[in-house]
Amino acid sequence: MLTQNYYDLRGGDKMNSNSNNRQLERYEKLEKIGEGTYGVVYKARDSVTKELVALKKIKLENEDEGVPSTAMREISILKELQPHPNIVGLKEVIYQPNEKKLYLVFEYVEMDFKKFLDQNKHNLTLSQIKHFTFQILNGLNYCHSRRIIHRDLKPQNILIDKSTGIIKLADFGLARAFGVPIKTLTHEVETLWYRAPEILLSQKQYSLGVDIWSVGCILTEMVEKHGLFCGDSEIDQIFKIFQYHGTPTVQDWPNIADLPDFKPTFPRFRPTPPEQFFKNFEKNGLDLVTKMIALDPAKRIYVKEAMKHPFFDDLSKEDLVKYFPPGQQNLAMQYGK
Image (cartoon, rainbow, N blue to C red; front, side):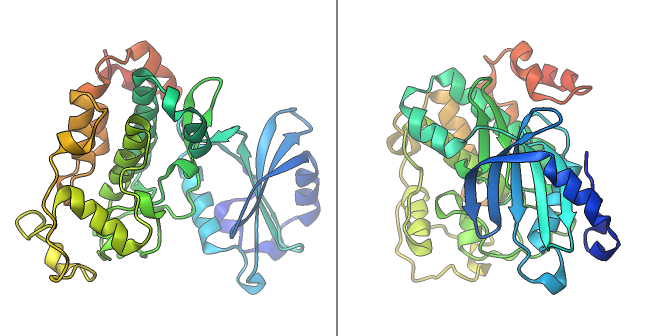
């Protein structure tokens, strides 16, 4: 249930504040589970249904402007993406204009994927890695089919239900709907290690490929047990990418000379053969990850193609059904065995 329509959020003086106060009171805060520039996240209990929820309190610093654009964007996108098993569920939006408070009520998922990998990456089976990767791709495919790029995909923004193994994409604050033509996007959007090279080099127009690059980084982290390219600055990050791919030429990447931060004076790195760079991938996994992290975004594999890659051929259709929304579970039949 969404108590406020996204498009009404800026009309706060017309809202029924008492009703919203009562709506908020049904949630009993249990503990703080996250904090950032956006605000605070609490683990809470719905006193009516007894369900656990995640209560995200958004800071409204510019009070005259109402709800921050990042929050508006996240609400709009999450409403468009509901419901899907691999995307975090948004249950309710509560706006208290008099108190200058905005709350997003999400389904509660106990752990983010970074914490899960920190605790379990040395014990993951190949089957688990395939299921986790397929689910990330499946959530992304749902986004991309609705013209939405996540843009900030990293383990910290992915949730996992440890009891079921279900993966959920979260934190859509930086996601953006892409149109045709693709609009110029802002630069500072991803954590360094998961940033696609076109973002690092300040390409003004980019699209779906930034997400598939991030999936390749996450897949590598699961298989190799360490990050793919672990730079400590933007220039160090791009050089680490070039140390694998080789410093690109216009033959490798036709648009490279047009990117604002690509310099002809960059060191001329030679490419490293994938078989030397990746130590633990089997044949199909190596083929998939190299297609995900192609240097030229135009050459990267599309999400839907990736879901049909032979790497996932041994996943059973019966297992994959649970990753699709009710009424769309027949879609699972085109994947796995």
